[in-house]
Each structure stands twice: as structure tokens, then as C-alpha cells.
Image 1: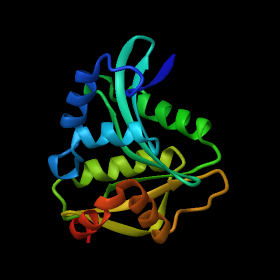
Image 2: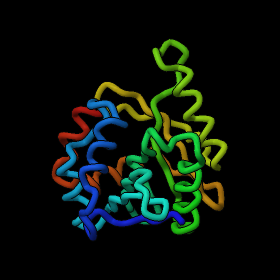
Image 3: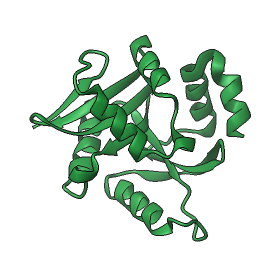
Length: 182
């Protein structure tokens, strides 16, 4: 049975969460870990550690804004990949937050990138799980991301809504974020 436990409510196994976060995401795509923890305590984000019964399988970091849920980070432990956990996590999120438009970013899929097959596979995974491409990409730092969305009525999230959500999440740091994401 899949269990989603808020990191703010239970710090047990936090070393596993932090290690997976650092391993699963390249440094240029990671926000400082302490900021993730801080923002999840403030209420507009949740940092989940995910278990299958008592076995740690992954993490998920979600940001909430109006009727939008942004999956900022989602990672399954390397030893558990390919066993359906990623799909089960997305299914759980889609059921629990069925009134939300759910968005996430993936690295832009271009043929000239060194990990083209991995990016293509990642996009196919999300599409298989009900996500569709939005009509815009965003650049954050040196990385260009495609925005994908899943919603029960097929409604997407506009670029303006995306940036409003980011402004809400980053607060006073939004200007700093904009400087490095344009």
C-alpha cells in the first residue's frame, strides 16, 4: 500500500529523502534543500516521502496555487524504478487532487541533447499517465523546460498563471528567480 507522508510531520528517513533528491536531480535543477523544507512548513507546498508499506520508494514535492498543483520534484529510488511506482504516484496525486490542474516540467526534448532518449522516454511516461503538452516552454537558469499538464476537464495552465504561481511560491525572491530564469 502506497503511503504519502509529509516530511514536515515526520522527519524519520529524512537522510534517504535528501540523498534521493541530490542524486535524482542535477545541481542546476535543484533548489536548496533547506528552502524546500522551509516552504513546505509555510503551507503552500508539501514535501512528501513515499513508501510502499514500510519501504521507502521516493519523494514528491508539490506547490499549490489556487486550483493548480505543480509537481516541482518527483523521484523514485533507483532500485525501485521500472516497477510502476511512478505511475502509482501520479495516479494517487490525480485522485487526491482531482479538482486541481496538475502541471510539471520536463527538460525540453530536442534531438541535439546528450540524453535525448531519456528525455523522450520521460515525456512518453507522462503522456501515458494522462499529461499533455502545453503551448509554451520556460527557461529556468540554463535549462529549458516543456510544461505538461493533466486535468479532468482537459484545461491547461497558461504561461501567465504559471508565472503567477512561481511569484506566489518564491515571494520576495521572485525577482531573483526571474533574473535567473529568463
